[in-house]
Length: 184
Image (cartoon, rainbow, N blue to C red):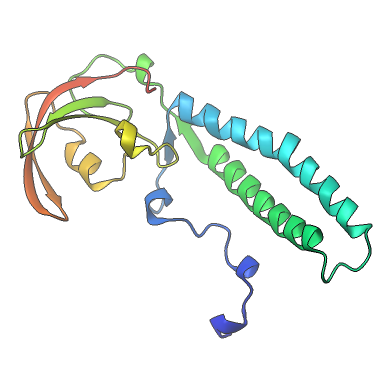
């Protein structure tokens, strides 16, 4: 069937931006804080937002002609978005494997949930926390464990120098400090 004849809502609900897709047959690693944020969002959608939107749709439907009723049409569209997000969050939480950085044994090697202080090739220092794909927050230095820079750093140790092959070319990165603490 031609893509021109498919509705937007007929597309797969799992179509995600590439930074949120998990590699095939990999686990959905997540920190306790990230897991709690997903759980809180799911709770909010199920217990607050969806019931409120159902009331709006019911009210709009009672006003008569639904074909030109903006409140009804918008409400139905918003309900589909909420339901899609609820399905997504439910699936993500089901496959999540929570890794608590505070319970990890002391090591100077970089694994998931590590907070790493690095010196970039230009001499600037940067602190990065290696977190799950659902916890990415670049302004705070939270990078996904499947990102190219995290993959370059994984299994390196304090004092190591790693080669990062980025979009701007190759860069030597020095690992200055590795710690496992609560990711804020």
